[in-house]
Image: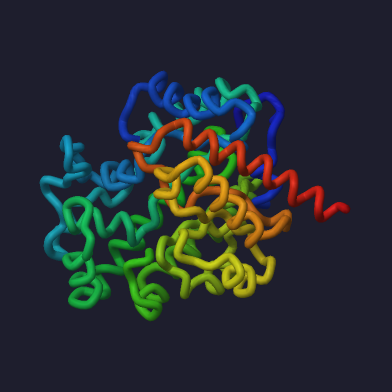
Amino acid sequence: MTDFPPLKNDLILRAALGIYVKLKLAKLVTLQPIDRYDGLLDASIIFSDILVVPQALGLVVEMLPGQGPHFPDPLVVPQDIEKLRKHVNVDEELGYVFEAITVTRKALNGRVPLIGFIGGPWTLMGYMIEGGGSSTLSKAKTWLFSYPEESKRLLQMITDICIDFLIGQIKAGAQSWGGELSPYDFNIFSLPYLTQIADKVKTQLKQEGIETVPMIIFCKGSWYALESLSNIGYDTISLDWTIDPAYAKAITKGRVTLQGNMDPTVLYGSHEQIRTTVKRMLEAFGTDERYIVNLGHGILPTVDPENVKVFLETVHKVGLELNNKTIN
């Protein structure tokens, strides 16, 4: 692996135990929050996009203004699977992401860890069939129930690439990385592939003599799967804001680190509302070492950056107060 400077802030690693762009732009966007909120963030996330995996499989993805990602030629019937690439060399197809990770980690100079990421197989399958974002996933769900075996074949193809892609990200320098289904269908069409990813990534890293990294999983709306997710090899489960912290702690029983879970829309509130919500969240999760403070989903683009600063500063202030109470 490439030699990197020692970490000056490894808090998130200890707790957890692209869009096709030019490298300089990916590095710049990744570093922006670290520079703006200097000393308040414990990790950075590489600027990329989950849809690079369908691109690697041979599908065209367009970003339409005001609409988001669009697949002009989505998968419609099982026979369309044949138009996907059967053997994907991730170094060739996704090497630009690996280069961006390496360049960015060097630029971080050990300030904080760099997190890589992928989209889950079911999430990616949904995009590939729906042709873009969807609130119902009706077309993708039709596949599950009309073509279950073909759906599993497609999910396996996506899973295999995700595994290679994650390993490539780790080699490049990344240091960590479905709520639309019923519980029954989640266990058939999502959980087995998420399990494969955790198991095979860690196994291959060990075989190649590469130190494993913490693996984080986020399944929005899948509160019913918390117990299963805490037993399949991931180090951290990221929670959305619909999950009660006490419930999550009771179900996972300390097997994994919990991350989250403030509703991102709270950042549209007043500074006092943000402080109150942060305090309530931290008190609910407690001062357990196996907890990472975060939002329950991605930050919304129209949020005032000053409100983000209030959130971060409050996390540090309240966290310190709670830790001091615990010590005393």
